[in-house]
Amino acid sequence: MIDYIKGNLAELNPAFAVIDNHGIGYMVNISLSTYDTISKAGQGNEVLLYIYEAIREDAHILYGFAAKREREAFLLLISVSGVGPNIARMVLSSMSVDEFAAAITNNNVAMFKTVKGVGGKTAQRIIVDLKDKIKPTSDTLLKETEPATSEVYDEALAALIMLGFTQQASQKALKSLLSSNPALTVESAIKQALKMM
Image (tube, rainbow, N blue to C red; front, side, top):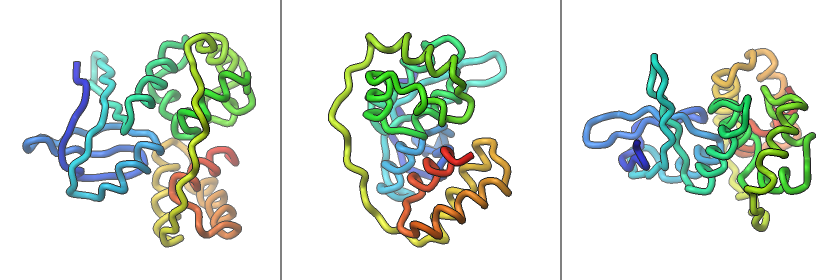
């Protein structure tokens, strides 16, 4: 099993990163919080991602996390019946690890139901199965950055389309969000758009 991959960031978008390790490019599926963290390193610079390797008959799929805590949350999520890697990644793209822990501790079914692909029964199962395994920590402060609105719009739109939403619905949600709050980061824009869909 691969524990982590360390190498230069060859390509990055909100859904995946390509890490160049000694001339081999590893395509790694990532969450929005990992995207936010490693985008600060910048393309061409060295990054480290902790890996979960999903081995299927037809593919080896890598999921990467900037922090071990996020990988631990991901592993907890996929241990729940009915929650696969893609839903787990959507959950961790819609909320931070601290928000995820707090939602479980506070029996917040509604928060999980805002995630695409998570219905009421799955939300309740996540909470029941993970209640004894989660220890919440203090809330983290949102980082305030102000990238250009057009870049935010383009990247967020691409990410939403990759996550399976239609272009029309994605454009409508993002235009509404960015017109009322032009200082949104890509991560925040996608998270809020996910809740509107």
